[in-house]
Amino acid sequence: MSRLTSDQHASDQRASSRPAPEASAVDAAVARHRRPGSQRPGGRTARVRAAVLDATLSALAEHGYAALTVDVVAARSGVHKATIYRRWGGVDGLLADALERAAQDDWRPPDTGSLTGDLRALNRVLLADLTDPHQGAVPAAVISAAFQSPRAAEALHAFYIDRYRRCAVIVERAMARGELPAVVDGDELLRFATAPVFHRLFITRDVVDTALADRAADAAVAAAQAGVFTL
Amino acid sequence: MSRLTSDQHASDQRASSRPAPEASAVDAAVARHRRPGSQRPGGRTARVRAAVLDATLSALAEHGYAALTVDVVAARSGVHKATIYRRWGGVDGLLADALERAAQDDWRPPDTGSLTGDLRALNRVLLADLTDPHQGAVPAAVISAAFQSPRAAEALHAFYIDRYRRCAVIVERAMARGELPAVVDGDELLRFATAPVFHRLFITRDVVDTALADRAADAAVAAAQAGVFTL
DNA sequence: CCGTTAAGGCGACTAAAATCGCGTTAGCGC
DNA sequence: GCGCTAACGCGATTTTAGTCGCCTTAACGG
Image 1 (cartoon, each protein chain N blue to C red):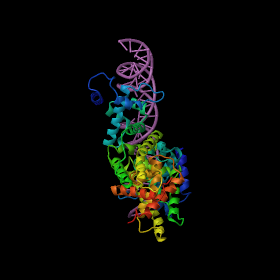
Image 2 (cartoon, rainbow over the protein chains, first blue to last red):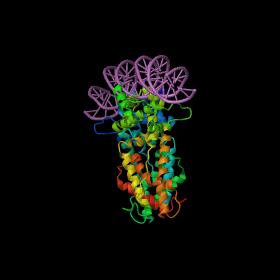
Image 3 (cartoon, rainbow over the protein chains, first blue to last red):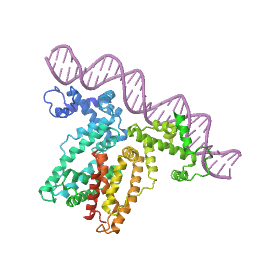
Image 4 (cartoon, each protein chain N blue to C red):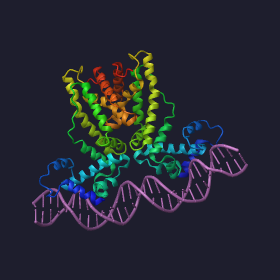
């Protein structure tokens, strides 16, 4: 089992060639791992990280957060338990790093031509992602882990800083179109628009549908037009 | 240590008298514990529950959620570990029950004379409670536990159903005063008003101040007046 | 009162999580 | 190529979490 997973991954990475020269996607992923004092972030280390985080994600999607344990990830990834504890410290570290890697994608907010349309679409995507067992399990698990682990909390914070920054363009477009009465705080507007979705999913644990997603978007637009987010 | 705690608790409870007759406050607390099939919810059982939940709360406040373990609660309460596992199943059960007991208070929403005032005050109280290490640690911990434990999720859901129901009077008063253009969904309005506080505290992990609490209240009022929550 | 029996106490037991020391491998600079 | 050494593999060990069987205690009904 452990060999199988290991081999499988090795063949995923690079079929059969020298490991060094044309590493560019790997370098990008690796650069982030380089911290002051850390050395040798080369090929193997990167492969181990990829294998471990992939295993973390698939284990999470398959058996849920409650069953996510270092031993499971070790078995799935073919990486030794001790290595995982050394590099990540525990499940919270795994989740934090998985989220950091997930943030390295090319996600872009929707563009429908209107502020309300964009925000509604954003909330629907958000809802779909968070309820999706594959993508959504990671943010959800990190939200939970953040209560116990400062590292997870920091990763979560950074993740949403980045996501909301990427969404800022929605508000900029709306202002350019003259849909808003003045210069508003885009971050603020976006956070208000999305907050109800998170709130019902993870705090009150209500059932959430697209109607709520739309209503939240509408409420934020109404508040913005009333001047609540005006700078 | 275990004897010390045990003795201390015994003397706290009832100095030196017969245990049975004049139990009324205890009875009230106990009545809830009586479930179909459960029997003998009498004095000792109630005392054990009180001791265990008190220990859970103080341990949580003192050392945080990460350090909250059954062994710690057992030691603090003077109740044996096995008993706790039998009755509560684990930390998630402890938290769920602690939240259920906490819900049995006489909490009332603020009454300032205006809708905006009430919602602002509500959000400020909410923020203060959630950041307070004593009161606030329980909801926070249960929110986290709910990701792994259906029981905690159910307790959380029920808790907020009840809290928002108690707040409904805020919106009713506002409608009676004519502050709202039509009949609005009070629950909806209240959830929108409070969602941003939870969102920043537990999802984005931003720093939260009273200015945000007020802004969230204002945004909800603006949305309500624009007809977003109209039934 | 007194018998019945839930509920709790107790400590040993099993299982799982986490750590450690040491040998091996493979990046990286030369 | 070729050392050097960071990073990983490995199995044993320690620590912590959770379970079990048996005995004791004390509610509750009569």
